[in-house]
Amino acid sequence: MLEDLGPTELIGSVTLFVLAIFLGFELITKVPAMLHTPLMSGANAISGISVVGALLGANVAYDGGETEISGILAFVALVLAMINVVGGFAVTNRMLNMIAGKKRRD
Image 1 (cartoon, rainbow, N blue to C red):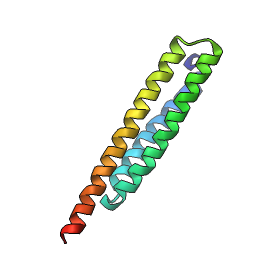
Image 2: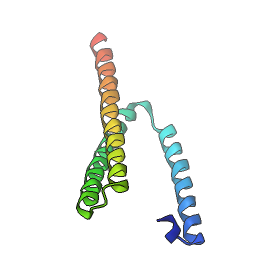
Image 3: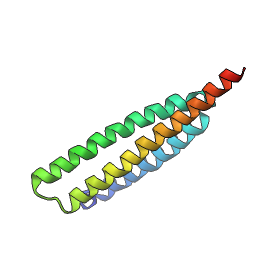
Protein backbone atom coordinates (compact mmCIF):
# COMPACT_ATOMS: atom_id res chain seq x y z
CA MET A 1 0.00 0.00 0.00
CA LEU A 2 2.80 2.43 0.84
CA GLU A 3 4.56 1.57 -2.41
CA ASP A 4 1.56 3.01 -4.26
CA LEU A 5 2.18 6.40 -2.70
CA GLY A 6 4.50 8.87 -4.35
CA PRO A 7 6.97 10.89 -2.30
CA THR A 8 4.60 13.86 -2.09
CA GLU A 9 1.68 11.76 -0.84
CA LEU A 10 3.90 9.92 1.64
CA ILE A 11 5.27 13.16 3.10
CA GLY A 12 1.73 14.56 3.30
CA SER A 13 0.47 11.44 5.08
CA VAL A 14 3.33 11.45 7.59
CA THR A 15 2.83 15.17 8.21
CA LEU A 16 -0.88 14.64 8.84
CA PHE A 17 -0.12 11.77 11.23
CA VAL A 18 2.39 13.85 13.23
CA LEU A 19 -0.02 16.80 13.40
CA ALA A 20 -2.79 14.46 14.62
CA ILE A 21 -0.48 13.23 17.40
CA PHE A 22 0.29 16.78 18.53
CA LEU A 23 -3.37 17.83 18.34
CA GLY A 24 -4.49 14.76 20.29
CA PHE A 25 -1.89 15.39 22.99
CA GLU A 26 -2.87 19.04 23.33
CA LEU A 27 -6.58 18.21 23.48
CA ILE A 28 -6.16 15.53 26.14
CA THR A 29 -3.93 17.69 28.36
CA LYS A 30 -6.40 20.60 28.21
CA VAL A 31 -9.49 18.55 29.19
CA PRO A 32 -10.73 19.30 32.74
CA ALA A 33 -10.93 16.39 35.17
CA MET A 34 -14.74 16.51 35.21
CA LEU A 35 -14.88 15.71 31.49
CA HIS A 36 -12.54 12.70 31.49
CA THR A 37 -15.30 10.16 32.16
CA PRO A 38 -17.56 11.31 29.29
CA LEU A 39 -14.51 11.53 27.04
CA MET A 40 -13.55 7.95 27.90
CA SER A 41 -17.08 6.84 27.11
CA GLY A 42 -16.75 8.42 23.70
CA ALA A 43 -13.39 6.73 23.19
CA ASN A 44 -15.01 3.41 24.09
CA ALA A 45 -17.67 3.99 21.45
CA ILE A 46 -14.97 4.67 18.86
CA SER A 47 -13.20 1.46 19.91
CA GLY A 48 -16.50 -0.36 19.47
CA ILE A 49 -16.58 0.91 15.90
CA SER A 50 -13.04 -0.47 15.51
CA VAL A 51 -14.31 -3.87 16.66
CA VAL A 52 -17.01 -3.79 13.97
CA GLY A 53 -14.39 -2.77 11.40
CA ALA A 54 -12.11 -5.63 12.43
CA LEU A 55 -15.00 -8.08 12.14
CA LEU A 56 -15.80 -6.75 8.67
CA GLY A 57 -12.12 -7.02 7.75
CA ALA A 58 -12.05 -10.63 8.89
CA ASN A 59 -15.16 -11.34 6.83
CA VAL A 60 -13.66 -9.76 3.72
CA ALA A 61 -10.47 -11.78 4.24
CA TYR A 62 -12.49 -14.97 4.58
CA ASP A 63 -14.71 -14.28 1.56
CA GLY A 64 -11.72 -13.28 -0.57
CA GLY A 65 -9.92 -16.51 0.20
CA GLU A 66 -6.86 -14.68 1.50
CA THR A 67 -7.04 -15.78 5.09
CA GLU A 68 -3.35 -15.98 5.88
CA ILE A 69 -2.03 -12.44 6.35
CA SER A 70 -5.25 -10.42 6.23
CA GLY A 71 -7.04 -12.86 8.53
CA ILE A 72 -4.24 -12.67 11.07
CA LEU A 73 -4.19 -8.87 10.90
CA ALA A 74 -7.98 -8.71 11.30
CA PHE A 75 -7.77 -11.03 14.32
CA VAL A 76 -5.02 -8.94 15.92
CA ALA A 77 -7.06 -5.77 15.30
CA LEU A 78 -10.12 -7.41 16.86
CA VAL A 79 -8.20 -8.53 19.95
CA LEU A 80 -6.56 -5.14 20.49
CA ALA A 81 -9.83 -3.25 19.99
CA MET A 82 -11.62 -5.55 22.44
CA ILE A 83 -8.85 -5.07 25.03
CA ASN A 84 -9.28 -1.31 24.58
CA VAL A 85 -13.08 -1.50 24.95
CA VAL A 86 -13.04 -3.73 28.02
CA GLY A 87 -10.23 -1.78 29.68
CA GLY A 88 -11.92 1.54 28.92
CA PHE A 89 -15.21 0.42 30.40
CA ALA A 90 -13.43 -0.96 33.48
CA VAL A 91 -11.61 2.33 34.05
CA THR A 92 -14.79 4.35 33.42
CA ASN A 93 -16.72 2.19 35.87
CA ARG A 94 -14.01 2.60 38.49
CA MET A 95 -13.99 6.38 38.02
CA LEU A 96 -17.77 6.56 38.31
CA ASN A 97 -17.67 4.46 41.48
CA MET A 98 -15.05 6.79 42.96
CA ILE A 99 -17.22 9.82 42.18
CA ALA A 100 -20.33 8.11 43.59
CA GLY A 101 -18.41 7.15 46.73
CA LYS A 102 -17.39 10.74 47.34
CA LYS A 103 -20.97 11.96 46.98
CA ARG A 104 -22.28 9.44 49.50
CA ARG A 105 -19.78 10.52 52.17
CA ASP A 106 -20.74 14.21 52.01
